[in-house]
Length: 341
Image 1 (tube, rainbow, N blue to C red):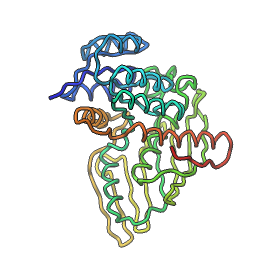
Image 2: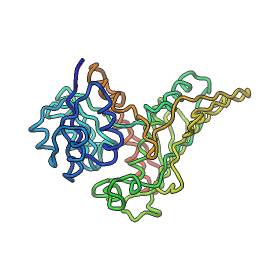
Image 3: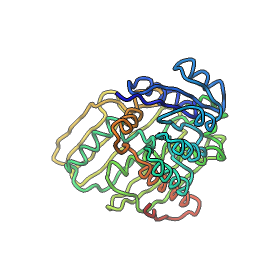
């Protein structure tokens, strides 16, 4: 059985709570190196999981013989670190949003191709059990043509999640590039593209800083038209101070599909003939309840089995493209067409 030597670059909350423990639980993985600009964070990882600590990712890639890398850095560094890892011959799992521009995203995809390595983007919403079940139901056709939808992802903010608190890079545009829209909104944009098996053709958006002391958005509301004709809303918020909301409702000609962040029943189908179906398939991972995301296992499987990743670089770029169009809409106060990429 193949054992992958893995390095994790960026050792903040997403690495601490998701990437590293899920790697440690995978029998095909050996964690060999950790890197963070804050040396203590990397050293803390080494103390718990073994390997070597670095503060410079280039030095890590030069000195370590790694098969795969998780890129969990601040957003503006995703592209350069991913490209360097690919050029070093490592498969790459990059957090979202994958880049700050389409140009960067294309360079990442090309670097992976040039070096014959995998590039996967960490859009974990696709892999969570309620969303997998919802995809199955939609694919069955029982809802008929999809007409409208609403999807929401909100919590108390990156400052409540990040180990840096109010000093987190998430709140700084020169490090994060975008706020709630890039942290949460891109997840739900990606989810709707996948659930509906359709692409976004046009957007209109408010992307605002309403309450946080930040120079990035803390709330974003986007109206989206799909190429297939369905229209819907996507809300991303860092000001849901009372609790997290990760829910989606999809309305079809034959009924409605509801995805709940409920511990007991997560998916409900209500058909116009009066039929009600309820499914308990497992909870959605939240900041408060860290159930397995499925991302690490999917990434490792793609490398070991030499198959395409569950969420390719191309898929990550398409979701980023919608975010960029929404930012343009918010700035210009007009509808923006989403060009194919």
